[in-house]
Length: 285
Image (cartoon, rainbow, N blue to C red):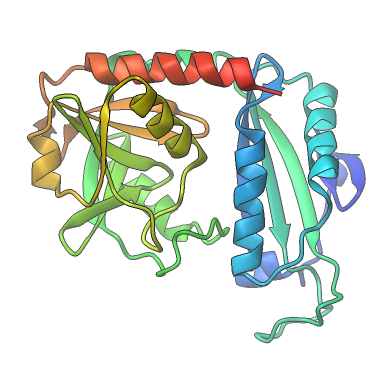
């Protein structure tokens, strides 16, 4: 049975509880992070903690503990659950005010901090890396602050199910005629030696994997252009791909039924995936 962490205690998952008055449950009033684990080590942990602090600040929420404490909790859970490859999920909510109210509770209300692991053996060997993903486009109907990593994930979940119903792997969301991002990932196209992805702002989440991949791409002398692109432009591109903490760099070979490039994973994306995994393993803690 998994060991999880709830508000200072390591517990069997069957004994872990959170109040029904917790604002994460009642109001989706919380933020989260997902850190990948490879070879028993944490990938991009400093980036995840930095983004967590940004999300908390944007939500006017207090940090539940220090970064050193968070690192210790992550490592303890990885050890107790014998995670070789997988992930650690972290969630912070505004806590339990003792009743339901739209107004924020008093500032001294303790936040709720929950962490758990998921074991995913062979996470780097996903078959999709060889076959490529098929995506559909859907309207982006989320709230306007997608740059904050909140637990408001209903529409992305619906998008995943729309894709599944269409026999595809994921959905790219479109706003004002341009792609914002995938349901749980950042979206990119490749034209020649140029990687194109939407610029940062309130419309998309600043992906931790995104930051690393764009840095590696520039170091490999690839051109990076941060701007919106359309579905038609993506369909006409040489290659396309997504990045996320748990899928790393994954090729996209079909968009709305139209093959991208040759309809097979391309060399640029394969190289970026290889570089990202090699460099991330080297820097893991």
